[in-house]
Length: 405
Image (tube, one colour):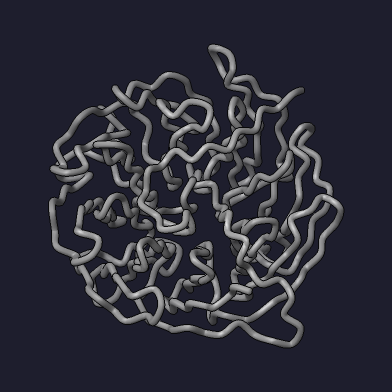
């Protein structure tokens, strides 16, 4: 089997040196930074804490663009979006809106990560609020509601995906039976199209690398691919879990897509070259409940495991993609999250430890480990931009670390 691996930048974000992290998963939404600035040798040193901020409960990850950093958190029956100076942590403005806690079987709080695009910021709340704001001033430009106005069906654990912004469109999952994926005019909020009928999942939609006119969506039913211009669903693959939770981003491999979920479902590598997806292999030993997979040179890196009583048994792993064979795995990170910075994995454990691990199929090698956050259930992936590592806990502690050489 021959896999086609293509790396194409498909967002036209404004970025001073291509080092910004403007949406969930970074510049290309693949959870990778191409920066070569990361310091790898630490000895007994600890990263300098540039600044700290308390932002409230939630799992919204941090984005940074144009010298500004953003996230949102919940406190006092409200969600608050924070805009701060990325260098010193000074809060420049906030945007607050009413919201419930949404704490069904977990502590609740915000879920969705903001997206910055050409001077505007797009953010949604877990109950269905959607805002377009001026990225520098926080001035509201327009707002919609996915349930009240667009007939959406809010998923059990709330809306969680980051808005996808392409050209003149902002694209979100509503979960509506008469158009589960909706495109709005990014300048006015006016509806352009809607397509599909599956209930919303918890991953963020993204464009395919092999065809930037197609949108990949991981909904409650499974994987679906939609036409960018019309919203029409072109092809789908059923990947339903026990509690209808698909949260980890599908991994784009050009003509191939790897999907992975928790709740006993596992993973499948799919070939999308034909009229219908072809399953190349399946494995229940690759169950990614929270952490999205990372691809490099024919191997995938991720976290296998489930929250709850068995969280300590979760493993960080390296997977050979052609056959779906694990070449190594290591415990000690719980149900954490992982991103790739050049050739190094940055792994944030669910207990708040940040580790640097070599991204290599030759064996597990941890380069450094630091305790950077308190609490537990820290399922939000870190972000790396311009030499700064942003880590955010579920209880709302936002820490910015100087991690460059």
